[in-house]
Amino acid sequence: MSKKKPVIIGVAGGSGSGKTSVTKAIQNRFADQSVLVIEQDFYYRDQSDIPMEERLQTNYDHPLAFDNDLLMEHIKELAKQQPVEKPVYDYTMHTRSTDVIPIEPKDVIIIEGILILDDPRLIELMDIKVFVDTDADLRIIRRLLRDINERGRSIDSVINQYIQTVRPAHLQFIEPTKRYADVIIPEGGQNVVAIDLLATKIEKILELD
Image (tube, rainbow, N blue to C red; front, side, top):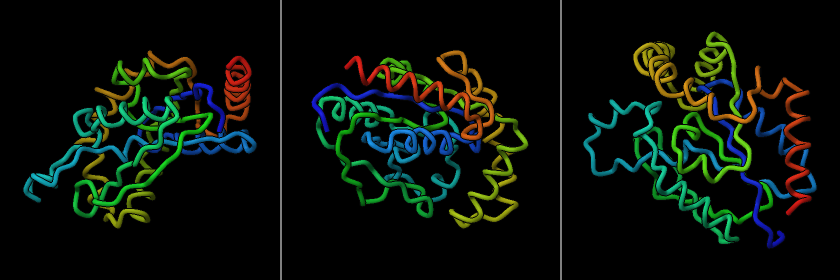
């Protein structure tokens, strides 16, 4: 790891839009560079002091669900070449776990999450801001598969959550942040041309530093 300031990239977009595929595509393009991914959904607020029945009502697609203060602090520390301990969220208990993940600073830092372009303080830290734009039908199918297979959710609970909170939050909070993006990528990591252009830009910034 060099001592130069890392390139900080924000990858935003709705739930199931393909943010992770874009992030992985960037990682694959920089196999010889060190790339660190910071997922915003590791930074949900700690709710250990709230009764379980209230935790179950948490809207995870609302800006207030995130501890952006801690996320911003960690990004700043990593930019100064300092290691941090990334929190872990326990989705079964709907609160932050006692576990942490030690992470070291790297040349390229990707901040990935649905609402990373909602906070002006986070935007200010980013060198490149990306919004992954994908049709709603694909996003709900991807979210359905993820929540059932990875988070043990039922089909009914995922669909009800989508109708009650995910879709309204997307329209109210997530979609409007598209205006702050430098690059809009339709269809996520399948858009090879957009990934190539983004990788070229990152390479140029690294060379300048």
